[in-house]
Image 1 (cartoon, one colour):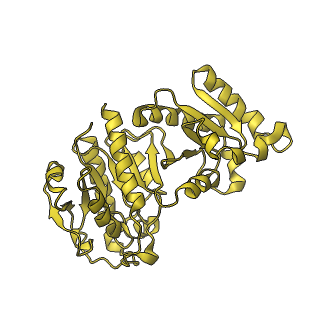
Image 2: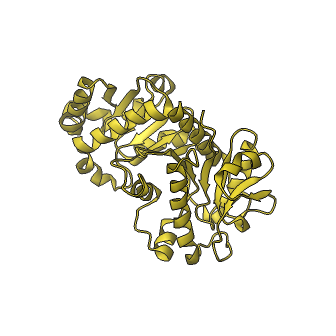
Image 3: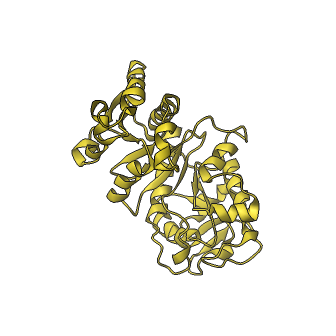
Amino acid sequence: MCALPIALTMGEPAGIGPDITGPAWQCLRHEQSFFLIGDPAFLPGDVPVKVISNPAEATRVMPDALPVLARDFSTPRVPGTAQASHAPHIIASIHEAVVLVETGQAAALTTNPINKKALQDGGGFAYPGHTEFLAALANNGTGADHVVMMLACDALKVVPATIHIALVDVPKALTKEGLRAVIRTTHSALRRDFGVKTPRIAVAGLNPHAGEGGAMGWEEIRVIAPLLDELRVEGLEIAGPLPADTMFHPQARARYDVAICMYHDQALIPIKTLDFASGVNVTLGLPFVRTSPDHGTAFDIAGTDAADPASLIAALRLARLMADARSS
């Protein structure tokens, strides 16, 4: 078991990150330790806070107060309205969290949601999102070769092979090389981060009925099936390509450890249907563990006490389990 605390970034202060961090501490304070990197002035007034000077203090402080590595964000928080002046501090806090994990001062990284446009406008943020920024920061800035997004809950783990692209662009984005990298990265992560000795991987087809022998599309025959045959020769336990509409009922889910899906909604609809509140976003392929709540900044409810902390709590718990798996 890894005894180090988890580093938690505040994310976009105008969003619900500060609102859900206090309840997450309240839920987990006798279960595990984490510390927040951010401005303690942004936290709700009913959250007991203890400013710490280094992560090693977090475990001792955790039962009585939320440990915070205090960083002055220079201007006040306005719930629902992003401040351009906050952007450099948000970016710096993510960078600092990565350094703390990579230097062995924290067990894992959990990130509260950011707003990409706010970071672009106020900090010249050059990345599509958290995942790409973390990949660039990995290995002391030399980068990570290939990262993959997984969505996880107790009932299901899914990996979309393509993510934020238009549906019309998915077929040409599905290459054997890209899909091979996704499957191999997922296979390695299940072994290293989830303790699955022999991962069982289910791969969805792209088309209805997995193409039905070419009657409804050729991607399964020309790209997906040949690749899966190659990976089986390498020793991977893979089922597919499977019709996506029969992959997610309970009996089907019992036959695999992760489902590789061909596009965003094919992966996210089933997991959000099964567990909308507690899904976790996991970045696979990094040299450190990173999890995040599976929701955005929710500007519309920031500062109203309406935000549900369940996904952040699940993200912190999963980060702990993954860190323990890596250290065992």
